Image (cartoon, rainbow, N blue to C red; front, side):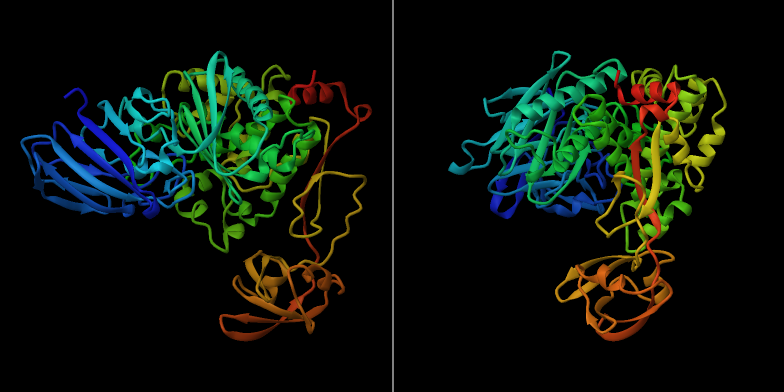
Length: 605
């Protein structure tokens, strides 16, 4: 048999959300072939136990049943056979996310980790995959999109595909259904986006902006190590997310984030969408090819720990929006507003004083991806703080080299020494490479910013660019900072010290912040507030009611905890200065060095 394993996948029952897969193993293990499904998907560091969605499975050989023994939650062993082993199984697919599988009468989407059993012992052998359309007249006009290399497909994309290995197979998500398409080239290499879901948008605007962004990233690294690239985009009313692959990405966005025809200036939603595309595209170098050593041959049956996610996600998070301003897709003030919001997210997490970004990276499996109501007080995001550490490293490299080199040069060296050579990055390699680029010992920087929990010297870093920085009290819980408007006139107002939402007739507390008024009063996450000082409280009037009192006063609060009515004495405490504002200092207030660095940073010549 030319291919030792052949998969045939068909949307067997879209109304029941069932994919049916038939796997033919031509040369099964004589001792009994083991088959397994991954427990997690690369790029999303949480055990998801995809095998729980297999609702039926059976095996046969030459038409005769073959016994299957389940060895653990995701592994089966077939009884020894003398011929080809056929395994037929059904997968329930109702996870509308970028990580799993989803099927209904309008479309199908899946990652290989959700549907393709691994033939244990044959992972490095080539595979054949037959992707069939569902039955019924409704699917006659369905199309299929994937980055898998095609062997023999029809004009709609259904047919046979090949994969070099199991790792290659599960790194190529598939979208099928009715979708819209657009395309552009980067370095004469075709790039394609398909958008599934009911939506209207300006394809020329998306193509033009994405071409600039993708071309910028390719120029930063000096080469584009692929033949083509595919953006698979699911458009929904409410949702956001992305997952990187070597030659493609799966995206989830809100339809209101897409640009309408005639849009003059990019909306906040469209900037968010461009940033998402930029982030996942940057990953085709940073984490898919430049990757931690432990990810090169990762065991997908259990957690794989590394302290380096702050770099692979944080550095990517730094460049995703930076690329937007460097390509002219957004203006400098737009970009400063995005950085300010990142700073605010970090400053509102007192967990930054308890957990380093290295620890956050290592504990992603059990803490970052499994956040609870105490998360802001216990952990820090390796995305957000990692982006600020990347910014600091950029400024440090510029300082130590007299502005000859920057983080751009560090990333090119990282690509040349590790990504291009397919060498895994060890836990110490980043620090050592940064020191070589700077021609100086940078261990103190890494000890402070990566392994420590001290505050970052953000004001100093921004000052080297001629960028003003300040922290002020939040105006309300929707206020995440941005570009400063005028002098700092913000006066602190009373704040409850919690994140909350309206739930029916009650205000439900979602998270209680360390040191805030709610915690001091003894309130807890899940409590439902009824009244404040004898007046009915809502999410809309809570800030206003609190604002009637002077600091130091005590206010009586009635709330339900579970089904018990309780009374609390809430101290009136002022909102902390945790909301960031940034602004470009006038050129007359900057030194020539600051102006030159700022222009180079923003790519404004």
